[in-house]
Image 1 (cartoon, rainbow, N blue to C red):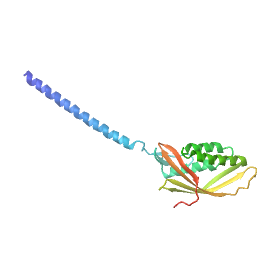
Image 2: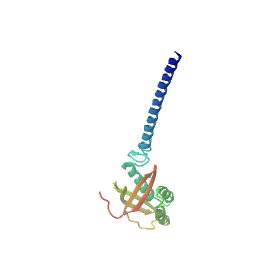
Image 3: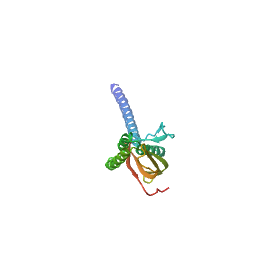
Image 4: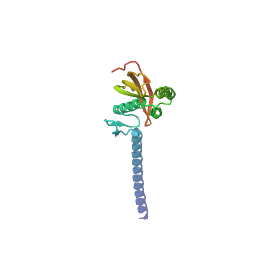
Amino acid sequence: MKLSILKERDKSFAYIFLSLSALLAVSAMTNLVLAGYIVKNHNKERVITVPMAFDQPFESNSYSGDLRLNEMMVRSLIDLRFNVTPETIDSQQEAILRFSDSRNRSELKRSLISEAQYIKSNDISSNFSIESIKYDPSNGNTYVTGTLSASTSAGKLDLPDDKRSYVIKIQYIDGQLNVPLFSPYKAQPKS
């Protein structure tokens, strides 16, 4: 009698042990599946933002943004660089340099310093009116064409309106905006 009770108890413990082992295996598999899902979708959450100063909401994540975000950033960078006065040019150029790529920063900084010296020495205020923005998805470049209007408060210089074109490239690296290219261009982009 004692032997049969002992065998029944051992059998019950075996069933409980096997059930708990199966539950542990299912739990481990579930954790592995969830971990794979998290790794796959890490930083891919799309966020819709409605900015105050622009008329279009945009969608972004830490790796990219949609065309409306690209256009908004291009307009902001153009405004920072060309809609300046002698009083505002230093702070606006510092803002541009914060977004510039470290490999090209010294070249851009030299260009910005010469622009700032010219604007300050001649007391120039300028305004860039954007006429067209074209995005090329094959290389990620944005081509901006517009008219730069400038004037001096004392009338030192006769400054005619100047039609200009620029190419700007915007990248996202770990959620940070990076501008590796912001320079004039001569050729018309493909439409």
